[in-house]
Length: 221
Image (cartoon, rainbow, N blue to C red; front, side, top):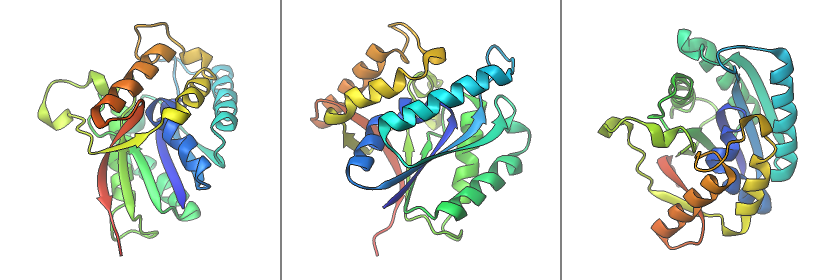
């Protein structure tokens, strides 16, 4: 299968579903990552920092073993200005890749860029679109999704789990490539925090480690 993961920023792909990416690769699926926005640090853009982060993303790519990462190079913290400027490049990359499965971040994340990426992806992947996406799935992003406000419309309620026991160490190794984003425990984006969440998600379904998802659409002809 062809798999496309749409990530708001560099490192979201690893935090959200690094183990599942590695598992897809082990199953001989072709995996593509679309990173929508470059990251600002303390609301400041520096080409040097962005280039460092891109190099980290490419190292993480080699750790996970997937086929391609596409940087759309949109500006962090500004995606909510015009949805169309996010939608069009996502649509173009979808047409280029023609994936069977698309993963996108959760709609309720308390980050304006994440919400816009979700909205644009849902439009791009609607059933009347070409290519027709047969399976559309949401993933949670550690250090984002869990900070959503306590209202029902923001809740992440998984209905699909992937056993990543054999791939948890690979996920942690890929995460460690992003040194600029590294944090110490108990920060949820720390290696220990990511491991604890994977074990918690595993307990919910009877695995030793898992990643959790929401299936938005799944077609079977």
